[in-house]
Image 1 (cartoon, helix red, strand yellow):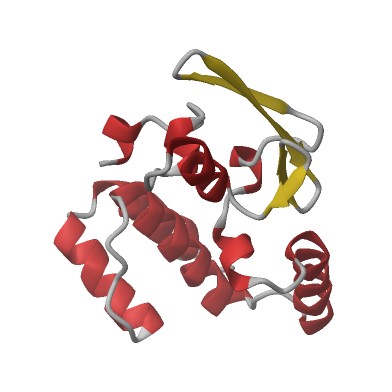
Image 2: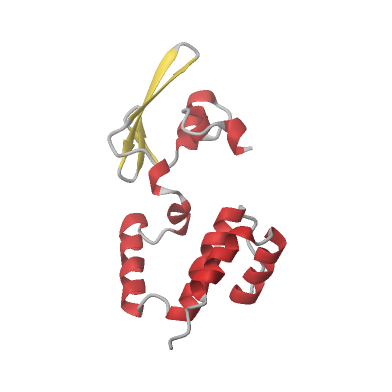
Length: 150
């Protein structure tokens, strides 16, 4: 008789494991300190790692293909790769903000932003040009709630 696979039971147990125990499992499975992310993140990464060790990870050609696709999206720029794609407005989007009675219109381009006919790499640079002070461009244009990010 075939013995049952213990992996599904290990995965199910993650939901009821205490956070300190999840962090210890992280240390055991990744040989690093756990990141300061929420519990759900720890559970999902641990679940993947448990399966990866038991059944094998992605094939090397799959990893290479994913890396190539990622580079096509962000040009190999590590900063850009950290920005969630679903947070960046689609090229062609117009961001409108009134500042001191004047309507400011920014157009999202494939490689940055355009304001008053000039190209900018960041919204913060545009916000600084408009206000003369340092601003988080995402907050200035209402794309990020400053209170929620704090």
